[in-house]
Picture 1 (cartoon, rainbow, N blue to C red):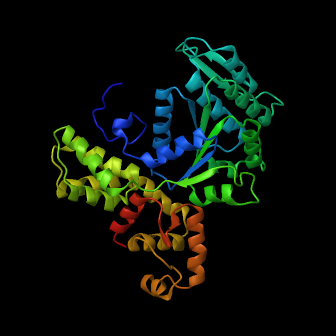
Picture 2: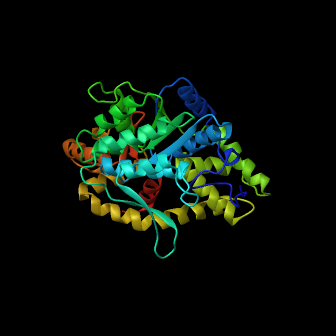
Picture 3: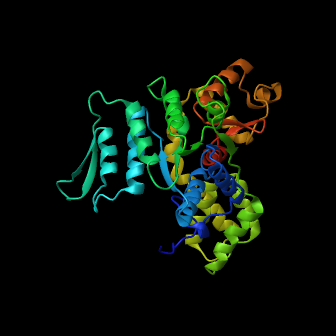
Length: 375
């Protein structure tokens, strides 16, 4: 595999050399699979869940011990869309349109009303989806499970953004997925999600189908010392320099959200051989400037009062009790009942999260932008 020109990846996965630590989490996933247990991995967005699973699958492939299939449900709204995503993931993992598709895979593709054809302009193979009339989504899941269960190696299927199924138009989506998992006990599942409270509820609420069906683990920020060493070492290997003080400033500014740490380091690495405070501030500003069109549009999604509360949270960094008289007087937001209603709306829309007894903005860059606004 080609050596990357920049060691700080902001998308995808390359190899262990460019992945920092997570040894405890990796060992946990290995133990889960070795002992036939299903797993739930959850955290807020941009903490590195997807990269961890890709890292896990890298070792499974290297050791030839199991086959990993990664399915991303982000943006799906029905069981049919989820089935199609799953089949595409299976095809990407096990199929090769250019070399021909094996009969078992052809059967799977046909089971969800898809066909294999060729693009009339480029001549390249492609799959067209069009659910057959009367095609049952449950039958499609059974066909998918049957295909995976027949493979020689154990199969681990990771379903990312799994909380998405709670908003599917089918009211029984959770129960359908639960039945699918029960019907194929030799397939191991890793359920990932970025809506922390929803993921915990799905697997811990005894009234829900997935109650006690998997072991839960929250993905925490990387240990400061190990992550700092990782960053400094990659700069040094390429005859570049960043001191620990600047790395600490990156951690503080990003709140150690993995994606944002990687993004800052990626930009710094591409700009200079030696990082100083002035350059770091320049990169911080550059990153925020690129997001302003998106952040500005958020104001249209909220009421005036919700926006004011969001700005107040950003300015404070985090708030323990937003209904306290101190906070209300300090911000001039008025009645506690109004703040409570607005807060619930912000939490539902995932602008605000409740973590370690405090309320804060979910998106660190949005928080930094709001902190810099002169209102």
